[in-house]
Amino acid sequence: MDVQINPHIGLAAILAAGIDGLRKHLSLPEPVDTDTSTFGPELKRLPESLSESLAALNEDNFMADLIGEKLLVAVKAIRKAEIDFYSNHKDAYKQLIYRY
Picture (cartoon, rainbow, N blue to C red):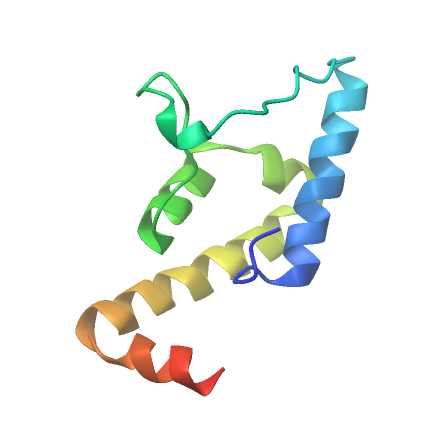
């Protein structure tokens, strides 16, 4: 799990993904023991920014079905406010990084 994620939401997402896989009777993919940075563009990558993460969250109902619409609306609103704040205060994230 990424260290920047809210641990409660991150754990909920991991559990939800596991439950979803069990419900759909999905099998695990083969393990990857090579450097994934050498893979081409066919590899689906995770979002690289908060904006991309929010866009991906808006495109998928997976989390809404499992954590509830009310919590998801709150999370989206908070992330949108963070995006707006940091886009208007370019150096604010540096203070946040150095604080922790």
